[in-house]
Length: 159
Length: 442
Image (cartoon, rainbow over all chains, first blue to last red; front, side, top):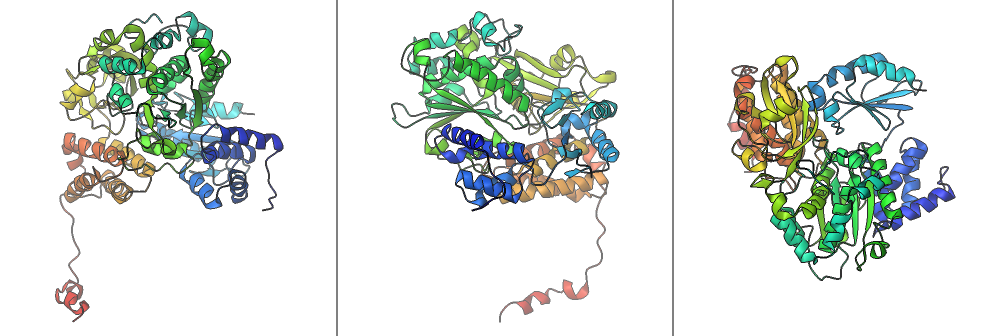
């Protein structure tokens, strides 16, 4: 099938390496989805079809896996994806208020992004940072023991 | 390694995460010691140490290892469970960050004991940074020939194994061992029926053992100290040390490695620095959100291990302790916990998929003040019908906190509900019993 998107030769080599790590190449699907998300920002139908092709798997299987895991984006997210934990430990320490105030400040709610595409926000389940509650994560970085003011400051310092 | 009790999994040594520091402190010596024993003797040693799994179920580790078929020429796999998604748990993260080589050494020992061909460390996707740390440690170990085919040169003998780090993508259910296997194979993280147990038919249909990160990181300490010495630490029924996680309303939250005979009040007041504002404790969840809670007035004398907690109708789980002060709104906490399980239910089993949603709705009504006394009974009934009726333990994990909180804080829930619902009078026509008769074929 012809795609407008495609992996570069060195990425294809990486995919082959990933496949060789497992006794069955299908197991490389999750790492390859991670690669695709890093490259294209989110998993559109086109992206998932490219992944299905390189993985030699049915598109339906790729879609099923991508939709099962919350960290694979099924729609475009902001440049800075803000994840606010509101699970028990964070909730007890003001995680819910933090989330609501951030939504208000940015004018968006769960799973949405700002019109300029700079920020998106997500209310997430426990991130495994209960000792640093309340916590947020921006893209891949954790910020623990934060107040609303701290988060404002962090957002301002982002490039 | 020169271990000083109770710092067995997280020894207090600066920069221990670096391979050179780990080696300088006697790292990878436990594995060398193991090579002098036969695999059966290693399993026997772990059995005698009384080590129990740290993932929540407290299954005896040595016994689990002994289930792996011996002398089979099939490949055998080890899945290292670092999915760590139970709210209140953040212990494995410390191992990835501060002592990754002890985990790798534990994997080598387990691998030798069971004849493992390949080990997979499954780490939750949110732990980007810790995955990178673990991968770096693993790359260092590979470069020195401590892992991989070069092991035969480094350590002698013929045994070697490969270790692969696998990144999850945000699904609580993948911490369940059979769901973890599905996820590793490139499928949705659906739990599977047991039997067949993983030791017979696991990853790719081959014999597989799944161990928690903390469990494996404990093994080198057991080998170094000897089984008898390790078994003498902490409580007899559940020996050793645990990485207790303190969070919630506590002055000094964090991970504390302590023997299993530690008192809960010591954890809260001596190590955790007490409750902010000098408030009283209303409730404590002893081992992650799926464990039934303890009331603030019953925490005196509670010893934090699985056997002692059973007396209070709860379990140690992952030792993630969540403390709640006297001002905590218990129904709201329970609503939040139940919302979590509803979100994380994989959807395979009807009791869990639907039941968690119902429980969330009923709890929402209770919190909003729209519920009646019957709703409390209904909630108990739904929880009771989820428990034990699902493929995996997520159903139980969702039901236990509901049952536990209702039992222990019934008054608080009862105060939030109206005595009974006022019904609109039945429509005369539709209420007529005869209506049904006309619908049946004559």
